[in-house]
Image (cartoon, rainbow, N blue to C red; front, side):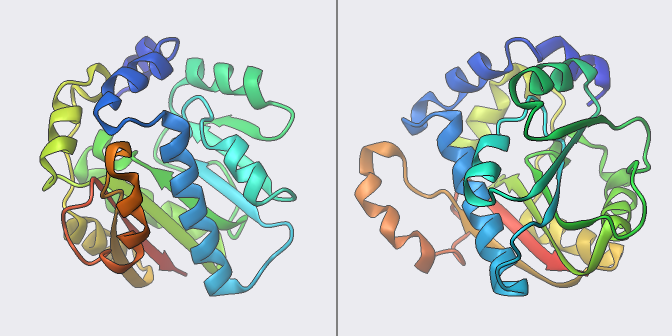
Length: 232
């Protein structure tokens, strides 16, 4: 997706997102927090508890993840990058005191080597031409410290509710959903070590009592989303 397309939806992104996920019975904040809990759990399992990690939120948009990063990593240094200058303006107005917002202009991530302990990309790659995936992932590898971790979250194309939500969402009009195994192959091609896939977000609010089962069924390719986590 081009910068102009993201800019077009920046002001109404939140309301469009709310409407698009109405079948889940949850808010955008529910899904944002879900992902950040996974990020923190994966990082702590890999590195132990680092009090002040440096975190890159790649494709941060209007900064929906920022308050949850701050909640679960209160001393982290947060950097949000996006191709949409308008989205960054909104994010900066909302959370400029707790995160840095940086424009991504081109294929190079605008930071020195080994700048971050974590890289987080939530539902971003399905907006990017697949021919560019490995190049961007290599950039993410470059800016990670040795032993740092990446978490890529994406929509699961095998979940029919997910497909419906994407097909009817205005800002997903040019999206191309990515199977988990394809995303894993791209991480391997980029040079990441030990990539592991997990399916997530299985149950809507209506049957929220079943959510306690989710940690046991991450192998089942029916979750609404999935992640691939890897290390440098």
